[in-house]
Amino acid sequence: MAAVLGIGNATLDIIHLVDHYPDENDEVRCCSRLQRCGGNTANTLIVLSQLGVDCRWAGTLAGNAEGRLVADGLTRYGIDISAAEWADAGCMPVSSVILSKQSGSRTITHFRDLPEYGFAAFTAIDLQPFDWLHFEGRNVANVRQMLAAVRQGSPLLRCSLEVEKPREDIESLFPLVDVLLFSRHYARSQGFSEPQALLRSVHAVCPRVDLFCAWGEAGAAALDRDGREYRNAAVTPAKVVDTLGAGDTFNAGIVSGYLEGMDIEVLLARACQLAGNKCGQEGLDGLTF
Ligand code: ADP
Ligand code: FRU
Image (cartoon, rainbow, N blue to C red; front, side, top):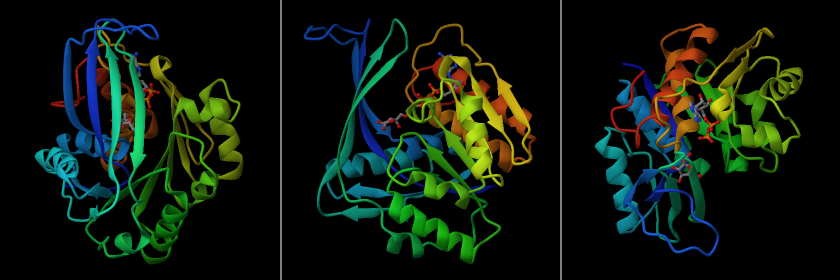
């Protein structure tokens, strides 16, 4: 069984399902309200573990009931949380999500007040059992140290980095990984209106990295280290019911494809299939290709 270490966030997601997205200052009744573990890296690992990958999570948990709830959420999927840091200060990051039944859109307000996962905790992890490390593109200064240490100590260990939001100096991490997973949000923040243009500009400065960019209902694009370009349409489900975590699922699809030794064209198509399946179902439970 392949083994992946994911370094990044787990959050408490409080999801309010509504018939349709409300107007500002409206008062609407929710169809349902549920709480579960979310967060980009946590979601990616939840999907990977259900695809048969052995997963460990490295991130920070608040040492209170909310932290334990998120910890239980991860362990329920068989994800090893032994590398987690339990913080005395702060509270769990919380996302209040409005999920629209009508469109499947997910509107997120996010609150964070928790210490970041530190370099010292990362260096305590034995990386020998892992086939892949997946990093979230945040906590940039610490992640740069982690990646530099991996490059020095385990130069053959493959690493992916999710780049969802523009953050100061995040570009300094790009040459340190094998695979970059960009979001539409990041591409737009850099002035690009289509994924290939972002990928070409990154390839010009990071020629040894495989590049991917998801683009919502327009599917996704890739540009490999040899300069070959790929494009895949979205796989639209019969009804789009829940897009929360579609990007995290897409990333899991890409990583699992590499672990299975697939060509980029094939793994890109499979990741779009998996993310499309996710949009057609509520939550991440039981998700497969
Ligand atoms: P995020 O969840 O980070 O906003 P995206 O919206 O870019 O991510 O979606 C990631 C992937 O999920 C897309 O590349 C696409 O394959 C799939 N996807 C997203 N929205 C839809 C949709 N409405 N229909 C089908 N597939 C979708
Ligand atoms: C979805 C998600 C949610 C989380 C939020 C954090 O991509 O990971 O589960 O609350 O994004 O930004």
